[in-house]
Image 1 (cartoon, rainbow over the protein chains, first blue to last red):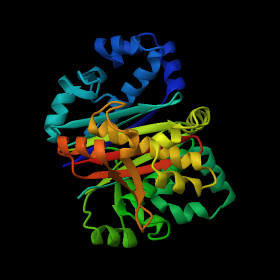
Image 2 (cartoon, one colour):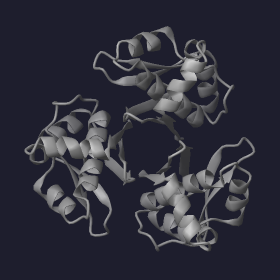
Image 3 (cartoon, each protein chain N blue to C red):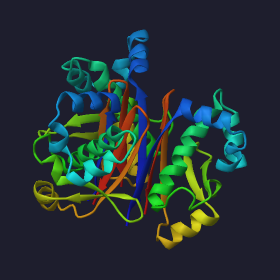
Image 4 (cartoon, chains in turn red, cyan, green):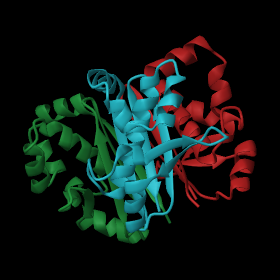
Length: 121
Length: 121
Length: 121
């Protein structure tokens, strides 16, 4: 069985949401995700594309907002620099329930739009 | 065998096309698709992302514009709110010919761009 | 095993890069790719979407910029008009190493953004 998810995020809109709600980044992203984003000239681009990744995973899991904690879907980088997904807690449980054992991720962004796609098997 | 399709639609451009050609929506979308779109603040966003879905299916089927009727590719929503694809008539025949039995769909949009991806197996 | 890649390219930004660096197109694209692009009203859109395709393949291969020659990843069109991928030299070697024998490609663009996705198995 294959499940897929794709998501687009408007970078400037996401920037305004994060500015308006100072506690939000801490609820959406793990400490490692925020640390990695903070090393970029524009951390918001990296956060936006990671938010897109989390939404794409939720679509692949077939669940709506609130069914899993966003920090339970984590984007990590391997030694080769390639991004991959780590599922924790609620997200890992749901994936197991659905019989999904492999999650592939690819991400990209321009200055204005961030995009992630996920294929789960 | 896996076939894939992706599509982007410029929402404002699609809005202008629909306004200029009043009969077009009826040829592109099923009654259920139009009813569902009509419940949104901006129906065009939902129609644009469904048009992207239809185009993505056509790419997965490897066929050009005109080979299948657009209303034969229908985006439906399950009880869980997740979108999926129903193929009718010409689209169902072509899928059977190509040996494609499962079509997975994911859709997303910002204010300006709508996107759909399809993986068929 | 499935590997995936997606990429977005800002068409106007890519246009300015190509204008600023006259030799770049020859290093990025094969002669056939440039000839095909040249038959369009706006060749840059076709080049941008092909650049996105090459980047998506590199992500599916899990390699960074410089690991393969961009001209070793070629987008060709079949008699039916559908685009597909041909890997040569460095890209073909790396795909073989990774055990990837099938590369599926889908491409799309609006006036402002070009997008390609790749699923490799």
